[in-house]
Length: 300
Image (cartoon, rainbow, N blue to C red):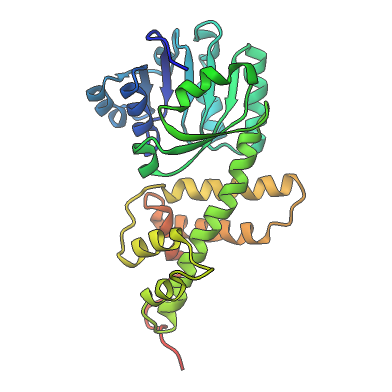
């Protein structure tokens, strides 16, 4: 579906993921008005045709589509539904594409708020990190009204390579919790395997070499493992966000009665790394929660 030149997008949150997403939307021909709590982080978007706004209300005024790409459910609620409430400022028949990872409980509250305001709502968190966001190759997990999917799809096509269409509630956030449980645990497991290799006096590269090409090989292990061994923790997806997401997974599991002991242990590892001061580093910095202390490496 082609978009109309008048389509105006209010984009809220220009962090690691949001910045390239807003840039890609402008590159696709949308009239993008962006807001970020720290304006300095959004300012470079002006070079890409994005109008940088001083307030969220300024960005939302008359917008056909509102995209929230913030930190968590509370931040989305405070910015979009606070003072002023942004939903009445939108254009008639506007859509709200809620792309922040907020968890199932907050997603339910946001669905209700949008319905009360008469705004078409798509619960649509995304899969991917900085790289996929920059190359418009995210995967959107979208649930929302079926009769408005074409309009939403035109926006998703500028930031995502694929959309997984779900129901009309907050199944997008539910599926994001399922996927995150795997991604977060995998990163922690890769980190612990490398830490264990070091603790046993082995070259860490031997772990990746041993699994290479086997049934237990995983491309993700080589991506994160190589970064850890190189000491490259530049944030593609920040540990601060990963720790928040790990808590949301545990909360989701408890809500539906799942005994997620692995998820609980994984969340504790991310919290340990966060408290050690690695919040601004990549999520792979969870490695520091497992890394052996100096003088304790080796084996009998």
